[in-house]
Image 1 (cartoon, rainbow, N blue to C red):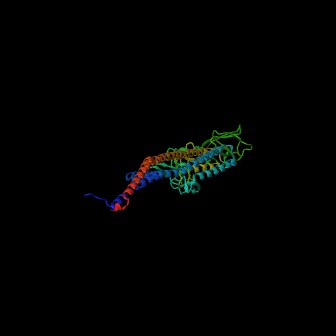
Image 2: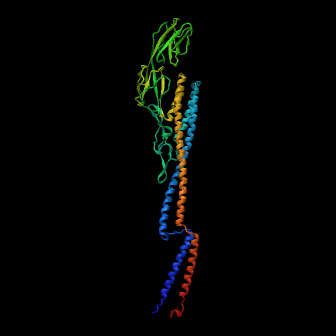
Image 3: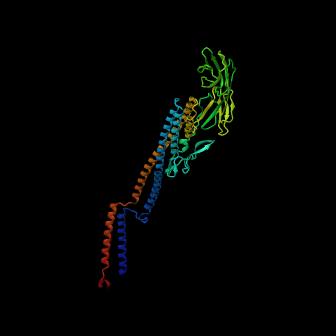
Length: 471
């Protein structure tokens, strides 16, 4: 039996063929227009899955790139400010050396102190540098001003109020870069290396370990001078600085007086009621020569003394103690002193090396330069020398911080370059999955057009309408 297709079936077959070939043409045209092989997920389910995974990697890479780009300006600004700070410290150092010139008078030293104060203010501005709303040297407490002036034990000091935490930026899933140098490590680093005295009075450090931080003032007090006097010579009992035993020699023929092995002082005519004589250590004795008989005289003087670290409680000195303990109730500082070489009274600067903050050092130098004109020049110079050693250490700390920021900046640059290269690589992989081969698309487009035209022509012949076809 012959099967004869109905007219409706022929129509459906022609329509389906035209729709199928039209869809192929449209897909080829979309690929040609977009340049993409995968226009919609249904075009390639496996390829779409791979593409989405690669795009997630691109998103992660872009987030790392954005974070490193945002971090770079702050690192560069912090580096620039520390470079400026290093220059300021060099200027302060030069002024301190200038202030150690023994020929300067009180007015000259005041001028130097004023210049150092101005530079300290500039350095404080650097330490409190902000980038937008963030303080660069406050650790992770970026909303807190890191260095503030406060009154501590009646003294105005610059105190650090940031924290010691590190700011970090991720440059990959398992890699990070430390971005900041904290204010403490740059300006207030604590690295105790020993206790040093100023070598003014003859005190030295005892045998037991000391406990303290920064600077402390040891007050060495002269509690009176005694000796068997004669030939009309007497002690005035005022403002002596001699400690321990020393000989007193009067040479009548030469009309000179000498204490210890110090310089010989001429006895004026008439002999004065208060002649100041210094020994080889610069310790002073006030002698009343107004009743001197004009004869030779020799005796031994003994200067009694005591020491204090808080200016309130004084401990007597017996000049044989190698480990005398003194303590400050206000700061909890404990010092052990060797008094066997103590020769004169005065203020002795104790430095807990490696612990003074930079601003304490600078302000201490300013205070030293403003000591009264009556202060011994050697005392001022030795105190400034102690401060200078700590200033050099602080500048080294600052340069180390600058080096860390430079290394961070370099690592950020390397990470940024690596991320950019990785992004290009992943985008290439996405292109391999998604992008169309234009030569192949052109052939597909041509084939689709030809196939559609053939389907249309075939349908036109099959769908011819006539009375004969109808019958």
